[in-house]
Length: 238
Ligand SMILES: Nc1ncnc2c1ncn2[C@@H]1O[C@H](COP(=O)(O)OP(=O)(O)OP(=O)(O)O)[C@@H](O)[C@H]1O
Ligand SMILES: [Mg+2]
Image (cartoon, rainbow, N blue to C red; front, side, top):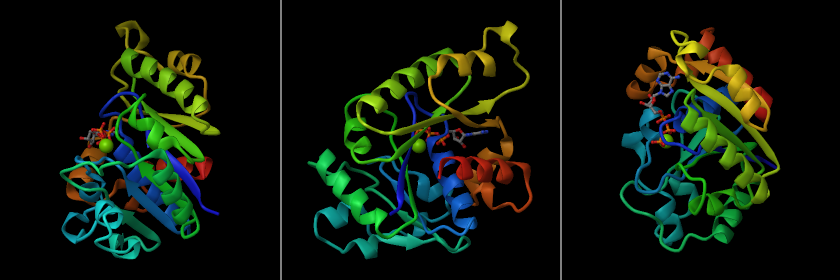
């Protein structure tokens, strides 16, 4: 049975999609059969980060409305064997998508994939309830901001309440030009605040931003430090 892992955060722009994409690539390169499920309804972008935006003919909305079978909406990545993408609609929500529907979808997908990484929209309430239903694990993305740290603490509590058994976090966009004296939360402060295991840290890297925009995930760069970092995090959470 495959594992369903949410890539989530309590604040926007912390790196949920970057991590979902690069951890999916890393896991596929470790020989796993991986699905990246983009649930950012109306504002998906994992397809752009993966360089697959021109290949999506059908999405989850089409499956739910009966326009196509699930297989038609799942597409394989050209450069990364073992990695597939299932997108949500680009310009609309899927009406009436309930926690029960999502749980049923997860159950279908966990029979077909070793791991499903779910790129979630930012949420600590509301829609989080829908995506968390039936998920096995959550990777929470925090950045060194007091607001992000506080929202991650809140998210962690909410995920526990919602029954997500494994909860981890990673710190993204660490910028070494700042120190604790600048009132920017440092790694020690963050680890004291968030009640979950820390599974990795990624610096502010122009290369990651360029990779996302060029559609060639940073984790594909053989032997690079950043590819190794994502591979290590993938090994810890899967
Ligand atoms: N470690 C990093 N170094 C440099 N840029 C990064 C890094 N991580 C993410 N980014 C950039 O930060 C922006 C936000 O990243 P991303 O889209 O992954 O965040 P998100 O949490 O998915 O955002 P949203 O809440 O909008 O879904 C993007 O422009 C991305 O390229
Ligand atoms: Mg995103």
